[in-house]
Image (cartoon, rainbow, N blue to C red):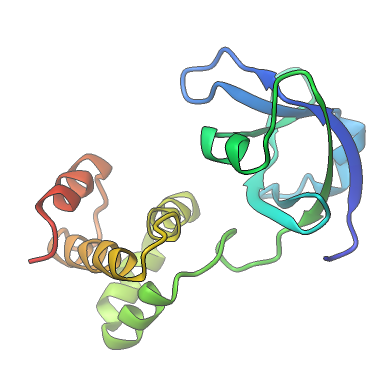
Length: 171
């Protein structure tokens, strides 16, 4: 693990429209990680980690969104002290690059260009859609649907249309 900063925080319920749980951090504690993209690796148990971003809370402090999958994976419960280690995420995309997408890029420069013309947030969303699938065959199918969709849409990403394409499946 990269040299990081170990902190104690508590899972908190968040009354937002998109997220329901967060790990809050005082600005002073995370100041060294506040860069343009605020991307970090958040380690639990000094070995397992998630790629995430420090989000401003509007009051001067920061938080990390924690979804249901992460709460289950790390057995996180509300108001129980959690020790985490933060390190800067120096990866190119702010999350792992699925081999399935990388292979498609190698075979089609237009797809590569369309993907890289998207905002970094949209790129991470697409990477996450592939990464979260456990089965190699299903990851490949998801990557192919993304490929087909971006080629057909000439690089214009509409997530509603993409999800409809996922339902239709590989052509």
